[in-house]
Length: 268
Image (cartoon, rainbow, N blue to C red; front, side):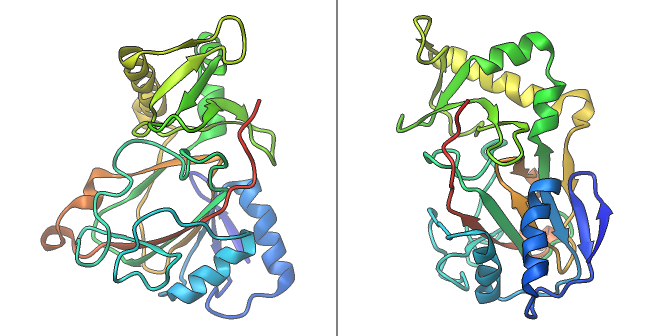
């Protein structure tokens, strides 16, 4: 395999995922996805749904929580599109997030493959370690005191916590699926935010992600054959607005995604 540094992660060439991959290469990929956070594997042609699932199983048990589109090639492949007859529409447009943030153990990995590439319709990624480290001391101190809940109030999670494998600072978040925050959870100073304060914090988070002319963000322009393996706990993402432009303007966009069952509860 040949690696080339990308704005976030690395581009990988010299491997054919449609063929049997030697065990030592699989083990190297499993190490490298934590090291680089995004492995953008190029020139893969069209990877079948069954093979997509087989590759995903390198990283653990698959877990699927979303509606299965009738044209999905496999029950564990989430199929999204800019055409509702081809896949689920308006996916990933509710705000910057990690996948499965609403779960007690968020998904550990997400694996993406664009099987029909439009003229435009990028996926934007943000590295969470660099995001946390870019905060002013005052802002980081505030974020370190925050815990978040989803709309169902099922789980409470620290906003900032150490990545369970790399120990780098990261965040558990979804700007469009956060029910509220709790300050100083588990202490005598514990206090829940009201709707207005919650909205202010979410807006602050969005501004921190997009500050300095979005210098932290890499907007990935998909090419035919791209297959991306993501450390979901280390990289946030969002579909760009152009991802929902009609087929008549940009061509058909079809993305396949699998997610790997979480292993870790976010904790300080």
